[in-house]
Length: 209
Image 1 (cartoon, one colour):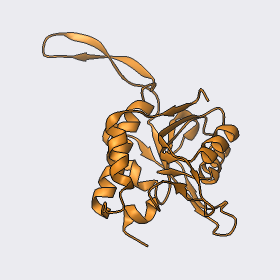
Image 2 (tube, one colour; image 1 turned 180 degrees about the vertical axis):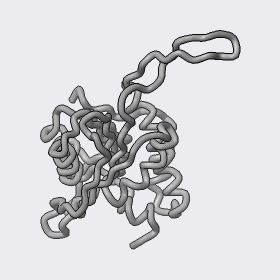
Image 3 (cartoon, one colour; image 1 turned 135 degrees about the vertical axis):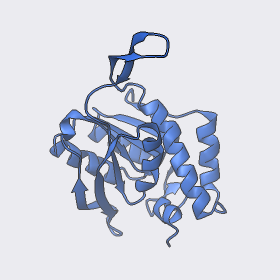
Image 4 (tube, rainbow, N blue to C red; image 1 turned 90 degrees about the vertical axis):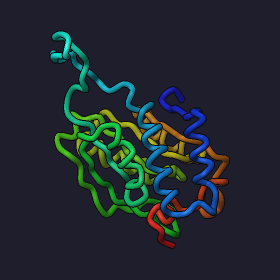
């Protein structure tokens, strides 16, 4: 899968290990998710287009690179994806933020849509879709389909933990996007939870049950 990047940076792996610990509390969990998103974003955004702009330093005038084109769009899949937005905004404070609302049907485990709001003109932006967990791949695949239907073209997907089943589905459904994964876990269990995983990311970010 030449469009898939599995992160191997020791800082990312260390912080993911802290996330997995069931004794990690809400505040620390939330902070870790944001930090991991920032570290992953640093890698995922390495190909942002730049343009030379003339500025004046205290010494002389020079041409130097600035990020080019329309502002980056960050699109979290609600609600757990919200936890990753702040980390990327630390890197690119001028980024626009859209939202896609999906929930997983408890019987079929398939995603159901309830909200979609994207910054315009979406077709001119680099779009980073974020969701901490890529389990069955249904929500991620559906979110990207919705963005494409609205005209989005340059799409990246970023998750902290993925199951092989979800990664395979996302790759097959959308071979034209870049996928960034913090850690590839072993498998899904019969309830479509990632193993060993870290439980329900949304509940752990927001302190709900």
